[in-house]
Length: 273
Image (cartoon, rainbow, N blue to C red):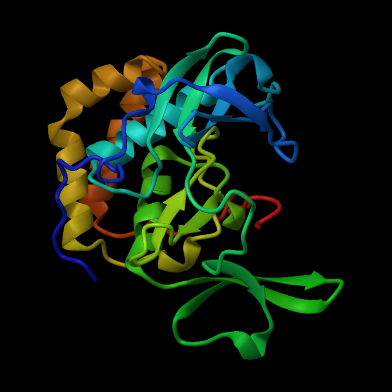
């Protein structure tokens, strides 16, 4: 497990221009999304995902027209913590679609199978996976499991900090386009930063595990950046949501371990993949 982290670094690809510097045109809509999600592109082939506020469906437990703001807030937290697991995300005003979140496209252009989270037969479980829950399916009994490894731990930590209510396996993208090691990215962070405990995730396999020195350094950096980061988050979240976030950071650093699943509510998103 890694013991150091540069908490001042920004999770951008080296040499990549910032999203705000580019000129975007609509390429097409991603029709499988529950809200309006549009892929934009530039004349040079850069791509990004745009989630307009006016395309959000109302939810019972999250305030209307806030999901795109929560996407940006999650990126700000990941960047301040020195974690590269969230693609660059910024606030954007599209001349046709209005305001929303703009996130750099990562990974292949078409959806690809990822291997971090899966439903497995019992005989497929190995020492390097964490079994989470058993399900009866049309194919028989299967076990929801996720792999071990620091990249997934970073995502799990971010989900605890942002109180992510919807960490599905399909929200993880393995990007090998850089020609080197696989970079794991996490996307879809609209259901975050609620003031009540909402954490629903497929990454419960790290529950009770001590935080690494790298993660403690990330938490310390977030607390040290409270004034500046708090001001950035306040542009996208309510004051009580910002306060609850910093309370979670402090509580997690004091506990020093990943939290256990709650006993008073269902802890998994649905569907899990």
